[in-house]
Length: 360
Figure 1 (cartoon, rainbow, N blue to C red):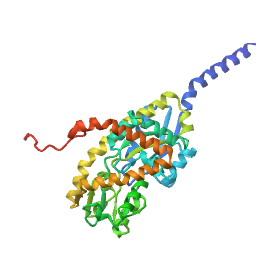
Figure 2 (tube, rainbow, N blue to C red; figure 1 turned 60 degrees about the vertical axis):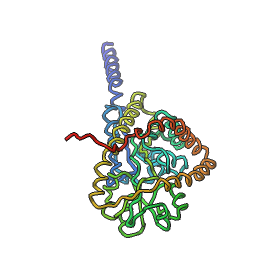
Figure 3 (cartoon, rainbow, N blue to C red; figure 1 turned 180 degrees about the vertical axis):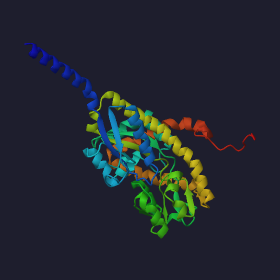
Figure 4 (cartoon, helix red, strand yellow; figure 1 turned 45 degrees about the vertical axis):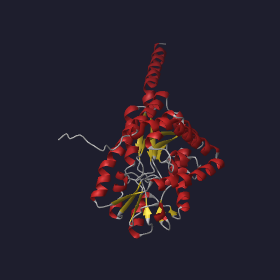
C-alpha cells in the first residue's frame, strides 16, 4: 500500500514537471527565406525583421533565415509559403501579379502612392485589410515591414531626356502596368531577374534598365556598366517590402507571440524605411562622383504618364473586383489627403531651401 502511494505520488510529480516543461518544449521553429539573394541589399530588411522577432518572441518562436535562392528559386516562394513548405518569406507584392492582378497595386504602381502614402494608407487608411484579403486567398498572412524610396529610374548608356527618347528601346522594367505604359511609349519591356541586369546592360541585351533605390543599384554595380541616369522613377514611386506567413503556422502561435510579430514588423517598417532614405544621400553622391550624368523628365512628361495610366487602371479594375477594391481605396485616400497635401506645400516631406544659414 505504501509502495502504491509512493508510485502515485511520483507519477503526480512527474506529470507536474511535464506540464511545467511543456511550454518550453513547444517552442515553434520556422524557416523563412526571401525573394532577394545576398547580392541585393533588400535582404538586410528581411534579416532585420527576423532579428526583431527572435528577440521579442523569446522561447516561444525562433526563425531561421535562408537567403533567397538557397531553399528554392525565388519565384517559388509564394507557393511554398501558401502550401506550408516553409513558414515565411520576404517579398515584393508585384511579383505575384500573375496570381492576381491586385498584387500590382500592393507593391508599387506607376504615378501611384509614395513611400509615406503607403505607410499611412496601410496603417490608417484601410490598406492592411486589402493585404489581408489578397494574401488570405492564398492561405497566408502578410505584414508590411519596409518601404523603399522612389525607385531611381532608368539607367542607360545613352541620355534619356524625355519620354520620346524611350521609343524603340528595350527596357528591363518590372510590373504588369509598367509594361503597358512602355508599349504605349513605343518601347519594349524585357523581363529578367535582378541578378541578370548587370550583364544585360554590359552586353547591350537591353538599352536601359531599372531596379530600385540608390544604395541597391550601386550594390548591383550599375555604375560600372551605364553612363546615364534618368529620373524620377515614375514607374515605381515606392516599393513595399513585407513578409508572407503561412496561415496554419500563424494560427499555431499564441496571441502574445502573434502580437510580438506585428510589433516587430511595425518597428522594422520605421527603421528600414528611414534607413533606405538616409542611404540615398550617400549613394546618389557616389553615382555623381563616378561621373554618371543625371537627366530629368519634364512635368509635361509626367503629366503624360498620368494620362496614359488612367485607362489601364480602369481596365484592370473592370476585370478584377479585388484590384478595383484596392485601387478605389487608394484613390479615396489620395482624394481625402489632397487638401492637406496642397496646404503643406513644400513642407510635406521637406524641401530644398534657397538660402541656408551660415553656421561655420
